Length: 283
View 1: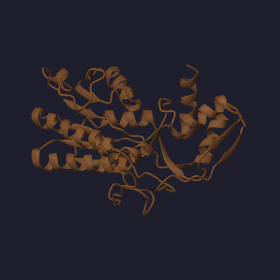
View 2: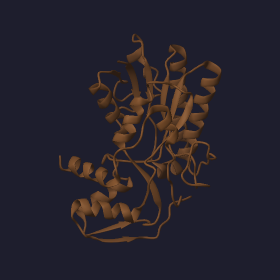
View 3: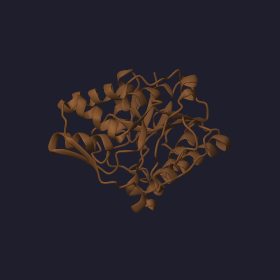
C-alpha cells in the first residue's frame, strides 16, 4: 500500500478520497488544519516521511466568486500548485492533480482531451495555468503526473451554492423550486465514481490529461424532475431566465482515454446518485 499526501482533504472530494484510501489500507498524510498552501510550514507533516503519491485537490473552485476575486483564485490555484510541484520535484514524488472542465463552449460532442482549451471564467483559466505548470515540471524536471479533468460533480450537500444541493434545499424548505435557467445541459458524474478514478490514477503515471464524466448530459429541468421523483414531491418549477456569464449550453464527456489507461468507467446513474444523496441527507 501507499503513503499519500492530500491537499484539500477537508473538501467534498478530498474527504471522500481520504476515507477511501484509508479503507483500502493506505497511509494518508494531510497538512495541519488551518494551514494554507502559502504557509511556510504547510509541508512540515511530510518532512520525515517518504511520500509515494501526492494528491493535489486544494483550490478555490466556485465559479461566480472567481469573477469577483480573480487574483485570489490565481494565487491559490496557480501559485499553490507551483509550491506542490516544488515539493514533488525535491522529493521525487508523482502527482495526481484534480483540474476542472477546461473546454468552454464545445465545438463538438462528446468532448475528448484534444478538444481546444477555452477558459470562459477566471477559475478555469487558473486551472489551465496550473496544468501548464505541471506539464512544464514534467518535461523539464521529470515530475510524473496524471491530470484529471472532472466535468460536473455531484453527490455531496456540502456546498449549498451548487445546483443539486440548491434544488434539494428548496425541496425541503419551500413550496416551489426556482432556478436561474432550466435549459443548460451538463454531464453529471457522481462523486464516488470520481474518487474511484482518483484512486486508480495512483497506479501508473502517464504524464497526461484524462477527462472524468458520465458520458450523458442532463438539463436543469431533468435534474429537478429526478430529485422530485426521489423525494416524492411535485412542486411547481420555474426559472428566472437568468443566464450565467459565458453560459455553456451543453457538455458531454468522452472518458474513453481514462477507460483505456486505468480500466475506469462510471457506474452510478443520475437516478441512483440522487438516491444516494437522499440516503445521506436522511442520515
